[in-house]
Length: 431
Image (cartoon, rainbow, N blue to C red; front, side, top):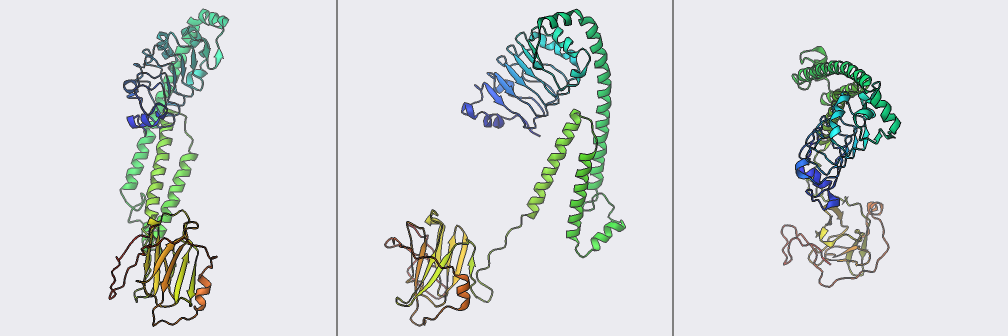
């Protein structure tokens, strides 16, 4: 459940450069807040405060907000109007769709002499006979009630009938309080039953409340699919429980709102746990087999072309690297029989049709297209020959690009055991 913290207020004070002590307007709606706290200490200059659509059960800790003019507490769990006497400049109060059944508690608003607008629609007290007349007669400073203007004749009539209306309101309040007490007892009983059910289910981990010695559970243990069947059964049971929860009739009470929110929170946590279990660490990409054979890999999924330049006795790899990719994110490794390029940590590896000289190889990158061109001279002992049929199936031909070669461009080369070179073993290509 949400709480009012300094970090939460600062995140909602961007319009005031995240400074909270001088805030004049604050919006904390839909934060699942259950208790009003800290605001009267941290934000003394507030004039407008939005707290609608939370789970606040009591009006408290706002009495020191002397400058507060508008307070919105719609769609909460408030059952009584209280602790607003200190809000001297309160002009508008919105308590739409709460659980206020104690209508006589509006008498505490008589001290708020600047109060002009009040919203109580959607509360149990709004269904009382004589509700509007009682409010109009009790709060003589009001100009608007539930969005409807209070006329002078309406107030005169309400004041004339006030003694009778007040008696009716008290009787209806008493009946509502008795009904509310029963609802609380039922909600407490349901909560206790639910806790016992969960405790029973937790006593047999992995069996969802069934005895581990039952015939049904033993069948599942002996099943060939084992763990998979158990997982599917748990998902099915969770779906049934969820469907049962939403189809179960319930009263609209503060307790039912809390129960619904906790059910949704439990679902969210279960989903997060399930997602974490599904996230398996990917095994490292196999680039070289156990018998030392290099594999063709294209994890970055980029186009390339491989050309055998017989005139210069070299093999040219043109790799269509992303145009705006920073060169520091590219590593090139040339070996006698294959070439490997790491693009943002993803390997591109290609087996060469002939043996090449890693020390004499060079790499350059186009400043216009971003293409990476690797020139690999063939060894003297290697004979040029045509590429096998499988090369024509995998190699994607790319149109030749004019490259702007940077002089003295280093090539990252990793030399195999037994070969020595003055070059470093790994160097990033830089433009």
